[in-house]
Amino acid sequence: VKSLRDLVKRHGLVDRFNFVPHQADGTDAIGALDCLVHPACDEPFGRVLMEAMSMAKPVIAMAENGPLEIITQEYDGLLVPPDKADGLAAAMKRVLIDDALRATLTHNARPSVEHRFHIGDSAAKVLELYKEIAG
Image 1 (cartoon, rainbow, N blue to C red):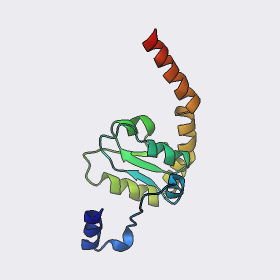
Image 2: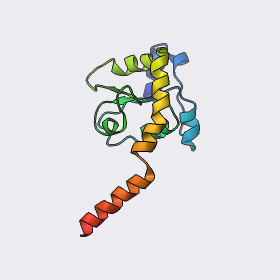
Image 3: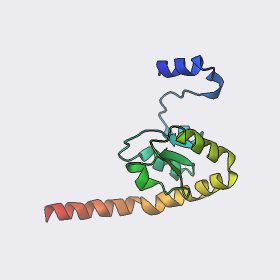
């Protein structure tokens, strides 16, 4: 964190960044966001993406692994090719300046998560897997 703070300071960007410490209540932290950006490559799942989407927040993530299973491009979030150096910045700018896109992502985020990742469906799939393994 210190090296990131130093980098921000060195580039004169202190007024444009907020370093938020660990939050005991993630809903407060996510609720304060305009958009959740998940910059990790090789993310196996990305639960925080679903948490933000369930709070009707636009999300941006790398187009690989877990986020590919969670986000439908330009319907409920934005996916950025990992090899595109300015991809995250361009996606963030789109969400901030394109009112129609932001409205679409916000409108579709929660229903998408509720429909595709409902706890009852997940439990049923796990039960079927256990039956298959045991049988």
